[in-house]
Length: 226
Ligand SMILES: NC(=O)c1ccc[n+]([C@@H]2O[C@H](COP(=O)([O-])OP(=O)(O)OC[C@H]3O[C@@H](n4cnc5c(N)ncnc54)[C@H](OP(=O)(O)O)[C@@H]3O)[C@@H](O)[C@H]2O)c1
Image 1 (spheres, protein in one colour):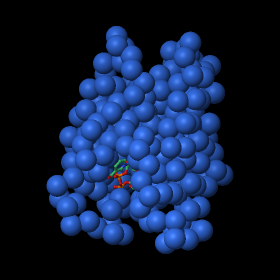
Image 2 (cartoon, helix red, strand yellow):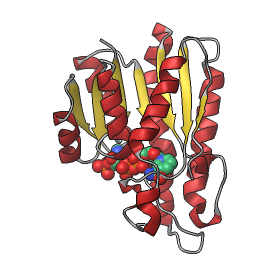
Image 3 (cartoon, rainbow, N blue to C red):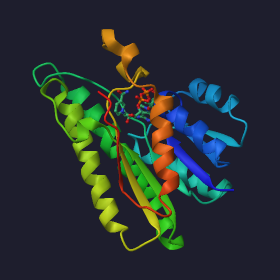
Image 4 (cartoon, rainbow, N blue to C red):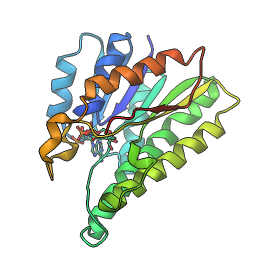
């Protein structure tokens, strides 16, 4: 049975990806900061799942969680770097604490998690790393300047990982999408939130690409919703 570790699995896209990997018969490790959200997702899954409460912005907690996963369970076949925060502000409005939170979660958290799984994937010459980025990592916007900068950072990290693993059986996949109807927007809920793409539909597209990659490899998934 293969294993997938999904960060930010307690809601939105992360929870939909968790269900999708479970349906593919993966054993799924659900990571996030809020236990009750992870428990709810786990209860709705038929296959095996495990919950780990962790703040990915804290490298020591990340190291501890992956130590537990490797000690008590098994290999990580797929890491999904999905957890993220959305603070959509101009440079004038955003404060230093919010800038740190965006970078600590959206880039550094994904880097910490990747550093925990990559050596083992390299030893086994096998594995998948799925990076959930955003169209904000392709086109930057002034009104979400630091969020865009964090996603551009994630894109750079993902592209460099693709280069690092190019002659191996480790696959790095970067997913870029527009707005989705999730709790990412809870701080400043836009009027048109309900018209945003459903994370279920976005998950279907991502998983189609994920499954195709054995024969046709493309490192990017670009979903052009608004
Ligand atoms: N929604 C959109 O419009 C949109 C568009 C493009 C890309 N994205 C990206 O899609 C990804 C998923 O977001 P979503 O839209 O599904 O929003 P979401 O429902 O808010 O999911 C984000 C998840 O990340 C977790 N999380 C946040 N900070 C964390 C931390 N420090 N450590 C561990 N977990 C953390 C949250 O759970 P806890 O708070 O319980 O930890 C939450 O479950 C993000 O990377 C986001 O940037 C979203």
